[in-house]
Image 1 (cartoon, rainbow, N blue to C red):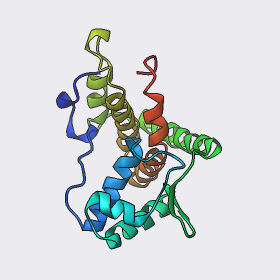
Image 2 (spheres, rainbow, N blue to C red; image 1 turned 45 degrees about the vertical axis):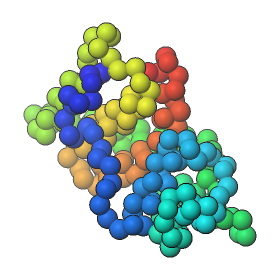
Image 3 (spheres, one colour; image 1 turned 60 degrees about the vertical axis):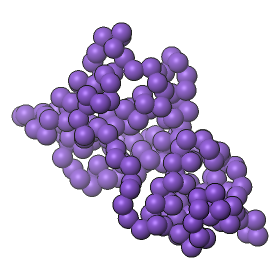
Image 4 (cartoon, rainbow, N blue to C red; image 1 turned 30 degrees about the vertical axis):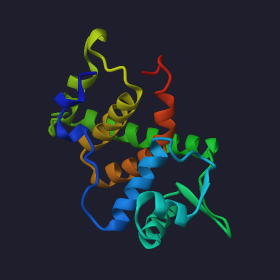
Length: 187
């Protein structure tokens, strides 16, 4: 893999900087989940998060409600919140959905006369087909590039609804992907 600076913007995700305070808090909490600063099973309160993030409880509450809808956190009656514990059956089911979507995308791409009309596949080739000496070894970066690869593959198929569903599934399995790329042989 090449240095991510050389890859196109289609393969990188920009951080959320704009939006409401609740949107920003939501993104900060999600970043803490994916960076393992909040671990599966951890318990916390809105007040603790608000203090740590330097905001009032209202945007924290709104951000947590959104994360609950997405399946990342669970409310704990009388004790605040909990990071959703690992449920490997759920992750297997999500990986199955991802595979179905990606296979359908590849079938659509192969059925086209001009497979890469969007140019996304060429950008993927530039990132992934490099000599071993040029490969990136940072696990977190590889996980991000791997995620971008899969999302770009599905997006190249040209079905916006399929790509949206795939991105949602991909986000739900992100923590497992990040853990997976902590192993050197996976990088």
